[in-house]
Length: 350
Length: 284
Image (cartoon, rainbow over the protein chains, first blue to last red):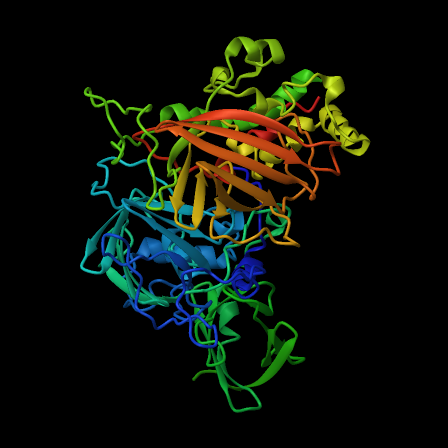
């Protein structure tokens, strides 16, 4: 496979949500109920189509990056063991590789859950057919058939699957199968497999709020089905932007993390204290360091970029360990962009 | 030179194979049928709630008669990629000036220079935007024999392509074209009715997109007017006028028809997924 366009992976993770805040189109969306001051009345009743069903059409924003945390990790609420060992091992391998083979870095559509959990999407609902357009690299779209058909018995595996929907009262229930095994369910790299069945329940609570429950049923990857609840606010007076992958040069420069032995990693384990009193607890987790820090609770796995610098698997945060002349680790420096914080080592263990 | 040009064209044509092999076969609801259950493509044009024609459906552009294609592009057949049927193409996909004598093409000198460069470039086939999985844009993406789905709702016409273009939005809510649009592969489009013809005006195009397979250039000043008339249930007439005063001395038009493709769906097609062609395209 030769990918034609790449984004630097870390840049994707950090920067993708940016367009949402910077839509250049500002045209008052017609048909939106407004308050006296002209602002959209997002608490007005949900609009309905000619057949009396809720009309889900509109531009919707997923939770901001990390708001639910599911975009980083769809298994966030699961217990250890709920993720099949091979799937967890594959995720950790992807983390260790700085996710350089992630579909996003290769301008692929990633997966339905990922697209539902990140960025803007536009729903266009018509009788018998609903489409969802995503503001994501190369503008992926889905077609959801609501004309009464069933899922085909045999499906050509695709990134975004084959979707059919039906109404249960005011909730549109969409069942999707026919996925390929190349999608990533989240930024972290939990695998999508061909046996995944995804059920989405869309409920437009009022004009400005769309509740979305996603149920993952994939016995190959997870010990039991599980459901994530999210809510999407309507984004008024804007449009989706075109997003064409244009930069194929970064990919070749992406590298995997350094592999260090548990003994080498153990030298950094311990409790570190920032001047504010905040603690950072560093533990060895397989081939990586797990760093518990209340400043970035979701951002825990760090991969060795060099012997002393560990890079977040999710963000631009880097942790550099400082040694004294005898080689003992005395402090860590947490770098978040231009911001730098130092924490002194308090103890070897918690 | 012609051989290279044709090769550049066929990069796109490689995607055309799927058109004849749609695996989804589901009788589409709402299609009038003859007694034997076949779609009746000459039934009356469907109308929306506002009484205007409903342009929804899956459409594919009709081919130019093959004899004419052979006359215009003698090497065309020889360069068909396995899986392609060269009889499926319209001449305008190859050359938006197919009806114009070469000496009458109203290109300005700078545009002619760029066109010549593209034609002569050792790597011309590899430099076609579509060879890099960039969008074919408008009108090129509509001139491929690939099905695309039009979804017509009050206020919005959405067009979904089978991989060759990102989705396209045509706003029917009365807004005007932006005065200072952000250049995009798909441009910015608004439409209004002229009787039963939808007139779509577009601007905001990136100058990186080629107008056709040969590489006729465009500038960011390009404005396109499309007139869409759904003549009956299964047939749509399309007039496209391209006005790019920076590249051409006068506006010019192409006219083609598209036919409804019933009982199927457009397929997921991810160009970046398996892009192996480009390295094998002739460099010399």
